[in-house]
Image 1 (cartoon, helix red, strand yellow):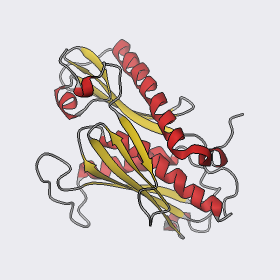
Image 2 (tube, rainbow, N blue to C red):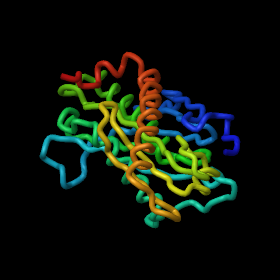
Image 3 (cartoon, helix red, strand yellow):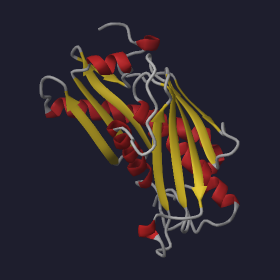
Length: 249
């Protein structure tokens, strides 16, 4: 096997960092760094909900995702307003589903929280970094609502994070960078809660189908990585998480 980026082992994450509170205007924000993938996540509170929720006494969480033109090696044109690219649309729906999976929407009233994930620099795994950082930004926005004394209980049911795994040149690898992802025989993105329940599993064989044994191996490897990511989330949020996360029975 060739040497991996950051000279890491097959079962190691890239150097990972969450810097909370990087935007002075957003109710919640963080910068997440997964190796050379850097994503700015902000959470904004709006005093309204989508029409289909109005009058139901519950809130909404949604997400938007985008890449800056020079987030990649070559400049990409910006998405034109009203013409979101298919990949962008798919990723932002995934982020929104992942965050809503761990939120009690009845706790924060008829409000919407929009989590924006803007990729500053991309080297693979942008959707996974967006979910992991997006959770931190969302939790900080809930902390702002808690400070206003408008929450009716614990808004977070659990934590949630995401990571990739794959098979490259026959080797099982955790947290693929761009070069590894491009060469992968199999790649899989896993979104999982802190309680061990899966929100989404996206797996693809590029050339040859893979067996159940390999799938289980990749899930086990991802579980190991997600546990580390959730530890990083907890460290970034500190004591704030205790007042937001519903205690487990």
